[in-house]
Picture 1 (cartoon, rainbow, N blue to C red):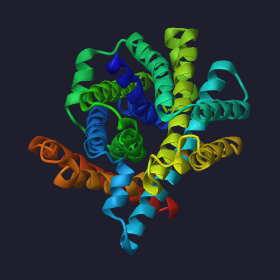
Picture 2 (picture 1 turned 90 degrees about the vertical axis):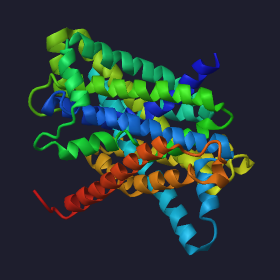
Picture 3 (picture 1 turned 135 degrees about the vertical axis):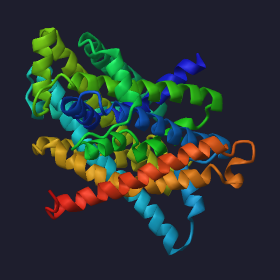
Picture 4 (picture 1 turned 180 degrees about the vertical axis):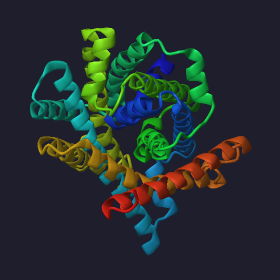
Length: 401
């Protein structure tokens, strides 16, 4: 039973990275390059698992959350304050930027499935997210999100199965890395949308009080399931011809599989948007508490005004963008730029922390193979960071092709 609860608790990580941004990136990859980029999703899933396990293990072994360990490591002095402000500011702003896409994506799913006015769907999604965040605690909310992940997974995986992909083509796409012409930025996007830095702080909070063996089991099952769902989205997207859009994908599914498929896709998109709309504000509040205050302090408890004001602010920004009719793409681009600044910093710190005998003790220090795997992941995140910032600068000043 403890392992079942662990799976439900850790499914919040899958719910966080499978949002409208992931659906858009994965479906676009399928529409443009069929199964050729499945390997990028496989790599990013394994990278996510490695980083999340390192963050959770750091918390269980040292007794400190990721943010508290970071605060301890860099306490005092101007440089330490700069690091903490950079981390906290990037995470909270990144969550707010992602939240806009989450709310808009959920509203698009509701509009596709019910014909509801997008602005009314935006308000409804925001209210549902606010109620769940107000009445729940992080562990309780995480288990609720497990249900959303299940609905979403069934919607996409069943649809992908009905499309009848050739297994050999899937295996070739997953295990033979290729970068077709014009796909390099999309490859980076697929990796960047799965390895999300605020999830490391969220996972660290979830690890408190768990046994290492149970959390590893629950984390592995949940993250791998999330990766499989993302791959299912890519397979579904491979059947779309021309420019990708939610409406085009829904129309194709309805034409090929029947009218029920439109409703199934709409349900999956709504579940993805709503689950991520809950986890992004929650992660922002947990990160703020982790970096600014000790977890056990009443002033930063789950029901304190400080904790609630952070998630309420992030949620309000997302709903505000939705009501203003802002398209998700600019919000997602901003989030990727902030992600590019933060992700390498957190990944490098994690690599150093899990090799610090003062935090981990000798028994739980990283093994050589684990260090080798993390070095590969860290190197990739640095490339993602440089590429993300470069894309943001190029877009801002209209540089490049």
